[in-house]
Image (tube, rainbow, N blue to C red; front, side):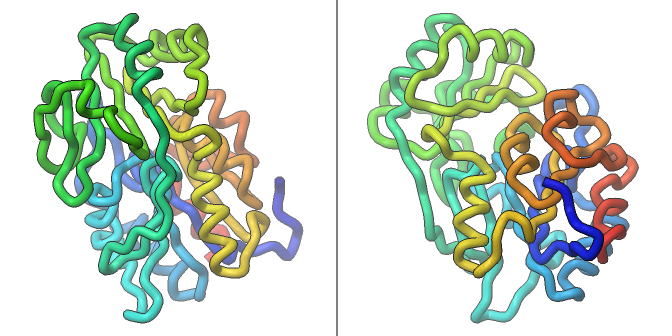
Length: 276
């Protein structure tokens, strides 16, 4: 969708990594602080009375520090809405209060992937602590503690999200893998590296945000969404105005209504300043 001449966003949905936080080149991680320009632009949104919702593939405990850095403080009786785990978890903060969690049986998909990539790392969130992992992930890629766990135990019960990571492969390898396997019963997102997020069927950032706008009495047409990754495609298509970051891959840009600057040049702040 595109906005009308008198359109103004009533809710701003913001991806984190590659949108609010810059990537550390060659490391697959992000800087731990937001720039003054991004911080100020987000504050202008709040000052105008619009809602700010963080929407990320990160787990909940990996998102609350970013909310704190952005000073997304609201009255005690109206905590923030945050969409985590690519839409599988929606929670209020502070304090953390999970109000929606979608789960699924990930075991068949995980086994299928590991047949092709037997040395891949697998992780499942351990809420409030970190992740249960089959082996340690590269430094900085997961927040919190890493608890070594056998893969069968990781997916023995329903989960909201599974991460599969192969440092020896590429993102293109995982795109082809997902296409070949079909991953029946799950949705998937391939990250910038050989990083595969498995999620419940039909669950995306867009579905999580739809839950939020329903609670707020808004619609998708009221939303400005900004993101840079493949896991932002549904969100950008769903929102009244979807904006891709300048460094996004072409598939993401094609899903957006417009393109802003790259993350290292505060592209998100530039887009927010258009409206607030």
